Length: 250
Length: 286
Image 1 (cartoon, chains in turn cyan, purple):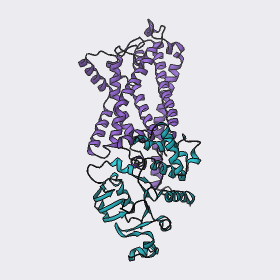
Image 2 (cartoon, chains in turn green, cyan; image 1 turned 90 degrees about the horizontal axis):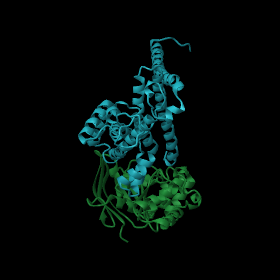
Image 3 (cartoon, chains in turn cyan, red; image 1 turned 180 degrees about the vertical axis):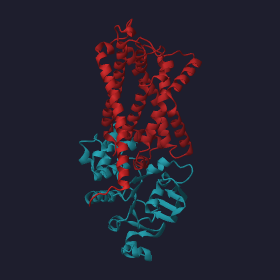
Image 4 (cartoon, one colour; image 1 turned 180 degrees about the horizontal axis):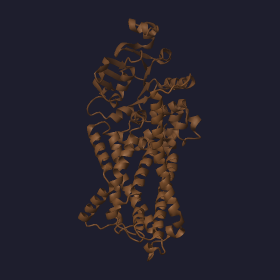
């Protein structure tokens, strides 16, 4: 199958520091791709280059191409809101919008004009169910989202992200702020969702990478050291640096 | 261990004492002001004061009240605040959303700060000239425009400072869903910062309702209840000024009563808006 995301000669700079060095990658469709590597290796930078989030930080500069369905997201005439609709982001810490639980999920559908009236209500329920949160919140949909626990908030953020009908899910260590049970919950959801969505996940937890990954990208100091199907990379890494990382030497 | 009085300990004790004295001077002044207004104004305060307009001979100590000034001040400050808000909120959101770190944004902020420092009589005089060129006479509308000019920089800069505290992650959460910057500003930033925005509005309102100089030429003064935008209106600060200027002790006492009413209005609006802000802030992300 044709790769969903193709990264071509991508470089990223924070002022004069080069955070990504000529990255070339193919991200397979409807699988979970895990980006791993030690802190500061550029994992998050790479992830945020996919939905053009990098440019929100001052002093960043990007060269190269990111093609989603063969369309360059860095093309001049690209609508940045469409890219971000297509590639939803689950952040490290959940940030509910300052609204009710219901409105958090409805917000994206309203701004993109996807659903209205009774369809909107049904869709809110649907996405809350998909995120595994419906049963816990169905009696207090109009309560402030900030009243939820942090694990529930992260599932709400997942529901909210799915509601804008993305094709790609980006996860920036989405379980790192959560307790173990909530983290398991999110992992489970991501596994259920991979049949429908191309998932790209940043993690520094090796065990999590092994549990979830179909495809693995190992980065070190801004470069891609090794990328390939999970089984191959984990069991038979080609590069010495990958082997050292897997053995816990970084 | 026994404490020895070294030079640095003495230094600290003296400076600590000075800071306390500074505070006491300021707090004492506040208590004194409130005390004076209460002691001198309370005896003259009665139901008639707040329910009637000045009758013939009011300024000589006869019957009547200052309902004209109470209503006039509420209309002036309410209208001025509303008019200022129509411009302030967009400017503040613009500064945060599109011009946060640009040199253009810095110039806008600088000019607002300069405007903040302009004495209110200058706004009054400017408003007056503006009205003359438009063929307007001293009127409620003129006063509202002058007050809006006075309040605009205060409100905008206060909002700007509040909106700058918006957590970047929350803004990005909205952007990640494919919101435009405008949608983020309108739906997310204003909601999150609503309590602070209300405080900014209140600050400007308080400044507006208490200002005498800017409405002196632009709104004029009348003993009637305001009925039209195009006619002069009375205001509480000027009511205080005129009554205090008479040679009659009972009228001067009414000036203090008027000041007391003004203080109570400001206090009531301040507490009321805090209550509203607390209720509206229930969705705010901490």
